[in-house]
Image (cartoon, rainbow, N blue to C red; front, top):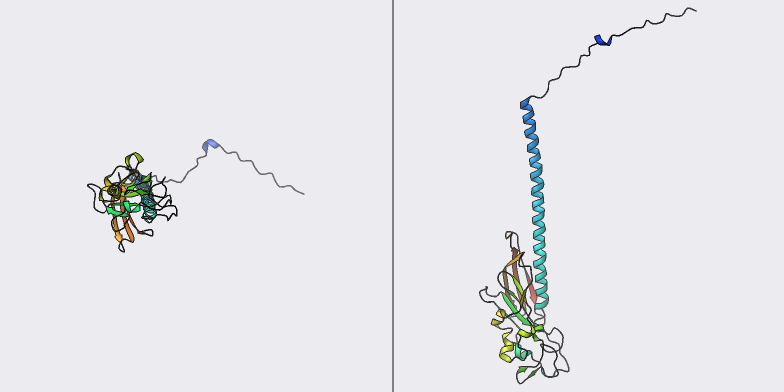
Length: 254
């Protein structure tokens, strides 16, 4: 059998080999500048979008926080005002003292205003917080003697809400600043028109953060209910505002 001849070996001189790559055009200066401008514009659009979204989210959170704070105030007022004029019938009490504080018509509350504040921006009232049958505590069967109050700590059962210097305040009277053995005129003065200017009030909100621009009370159904309206904003961002109102039935009116 005849074998085929072996293939001849080819020697390649690498120094003489030339590789030709296809010719490609690059970006010109103008094209590069246009591409850079478009990229920068898109980046600015994205940054502006996220900045606006963050700003809107922050404003929304601030509005919700303001709403929450004002609603808390309304709930507190509604809970207190609904008890206006309540006193517990106590068998051991022979003579109560509520008539010393009430108006001539038996009303236990007043809608008035503090000095230099809008009308109907203050509400004063009382109720028997400790269910003792009288206004105050530490008394016996006679809560008044010789037309004078005969109880102690009456400041604990005298309540009120007012607008003062763009802030809503609640009554927080002190024992030393209250005439405990008051006569009829002195006792009645605590819920009369001038009662909104007495000492002993405290802010319900942080006055460095919030401001109340409107607080208004009005009677409903011949004194059987109260409409409380409130409007407030942030002190440093007054454009963020919130207003609300609540109808409060006076279920314990005398």
